[in-house]
Structures are given as structure tokens and as C-alpha cells.
Length: 265
Image 1: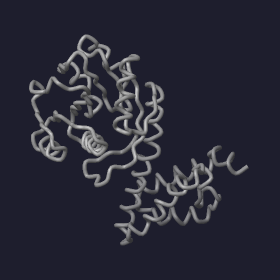
Image 2 (image 1 turned 90 degrees about the vertical axis):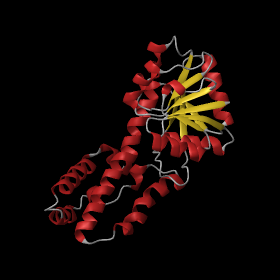
Image 3 (image 1 turned 45 degrees about the vertical axis):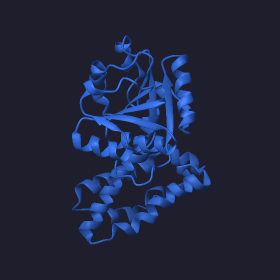
Image 4 (image 1 turned 135 degrees about the vertical axis):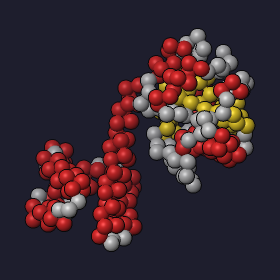
């Protein structure tokens, strides 16, 4: 199977490494900038180009791993073999993005990795994949590919992928914003942020290890309705407007939340 990856960012890099580690061959990388595309091609030991006119026409699978808003523009310019499969990797983009270009692409689908993937990642993290296909033939192709690549995969339509995308924002993006607030606070106060890493990892480790609901792991002054401690914390944050507002908002939400009330019954 000849695999061609379009994109040279974090998703492209991690998927390329994963597929290669599992015995598949990346034939070519199509990227936008010379430096990043060449660097990824050297890592994957494959050819590369930054000119779409030089895209190889012998691919079996073309994987689009670029920013969501750029996908329709790329599709309007892309020419691939008539019997080739093409997929995008975006959780928030419908499979219907291919429909206006059905004359160009007969087999298309989605290969969505539900994971935060960065170029700098040293070891490839565990990645659950969510797949979709436009017809039975495309589904059979993707299923065969997923088995060959030894992927942990499930099938998901547009609605399910978008729901997972939303949930991932709550699980990853928002907590990271809170970590950033905590790190900034530690810097201002001369504290070592790394001393908080065991606290950060313990909750997720317990969810994974013990298969327990996060609602049962909630601790802290808000869930205890400890107003005295909350007031002390807010006083400490008096000169940090952003952190104080976030602290107050989240405290109120936790105290009001029916999720925690129901779990405590």
C-alpha cells in the first residue's frame, strides 16, 4: 500500500511514524513549507514536495492532515488516481466536505485520531481512531488499512465525531488553560510548578487505573462548601484578575452542579 500524507505538522508527523512503526510505507509528503516538509520526509525516509503539481499519482491512500479551514481549498486543487482512497483527519469537519468534489474522488472518508499530537512528541501516545467512509467499498478499504496499521479504531459518523471533539476540548484544552494559570501564579509567587505535577497526574491515573467516574474523584473546598478556605484563596488571588475570575466561576459551578450532587447521593 502506497501512503501519501498531505501536511507536515504534528498530526502528519505522528501518524507517519505510527504507520511506519507498524510496517507500512510512507511514499511521499506534500507540505507547504520547504523546511518542515523536508524535515518530516527525512524522519520518515520518503520523498517530499511543496508543489501540488508534483504530487505522486501512484498512491493507494492519501491522508489529509492540515488545518480544518484549508481542507476545501486543497480539495478543489487536488488530483489523485480514480481508484485511490482519500481521507481527512479532522474531528470537526464533516465527511460531506468531499461531496462537491465527487467527480475527483470516488472513495473518501475520515481517519480521526482522538489525541493531541505535536511534532515534538518523543514517543507516540496511545491513539484511538474514529473512522467513516462514503460507501461499502471505502469502508472495506479503511477497515483493511486499519487492521494492517494495527490501529485501535471504531466507526463514527459526523455527529459522533463532533461530540467526541467537544468532549476532548473539555478533557484536554480547558484543563491545559488551567495548568497555564497555575504555572503563571507559581512564577509570580516564586513557587515550583513542577511540584504540582503529581497532583495533575493522580486524577487521570485513577480514572484510567480504577475505571472510576471523574465525578467521584472531585475534591477541594468547592465540593465541600468550605467557604472559609474559598475566601482565603480569593484574597490570595486579589491582584490576579484572570485567575480570580476563573477560580470564582468554577467554584460556583462546582457548588451548583447537579452532577456532583447526584454522585454524592
